[in-house]
Length: 299
Image 1 (cartoon, rainbow, N blue to C red):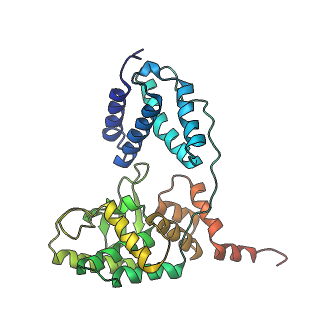
Image 2: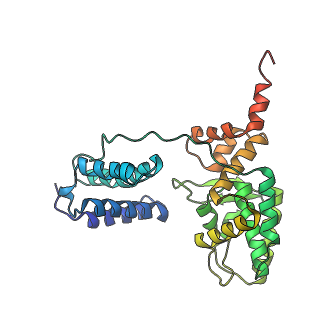
Image 3: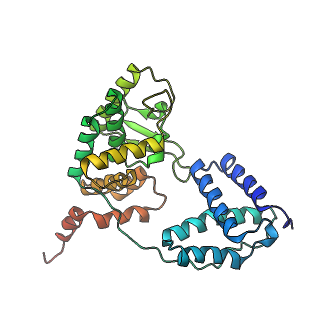
């Protein structure tokens, strides 16, 4: 066994392999690195032979008890650190995963928060009609908010979109290497098609040539996550609507079910691996539940 190796050196190899071979997203690799960094800061160890079950258990339970981690935060660190030890076992650096047999907290089954149909329309209106310094911002921001509302894409998936992945004539968007390194196809509705075409016209006017679909105002570079956060904050301030990019994903899912979309189709559009994840939206669709209650035989 090679237990005298430095943890950080082995972890760097693990991250490189996860990125290059397993094709994991950079965001996932970042969570692996930041989580291990927090564990090493807590444990003050450097070498593999210093790692043991009680040390990892202590790190996780210290976070839960003394730092008021939510069950989701506890599970975030657990899931970000455990794959490294599985990799170490496979490579012969460890015999047993020190994170086995750690009790996990029960997750709170909170219903996904969404905004109303009226608020969604209000966001689309304000995203275009707010006061902007540059005309280009109007078309781009409306296309961005429209993409989130009409496709349910994750924010990073949207920012990663390339020109070649949006087929407007055939009405489809190809999401490449989404969460779980999976590809999927999302149809484009007529309203979103209009927003995207208007944005492309103004993008062409500015001679943007980057392969990424959404671009920055001040240069021919991809639009960033920090830029998206600024757009969201500006809209929240102007509209007084409490929302986030991810809440628009929940809104899409709920509105689709209320409109009659079947669970299987919604699962494919959202990119869920398990349809059980999709079924939670049934609990948020009052309209759907009201229709179902009418089927009671004594109703």
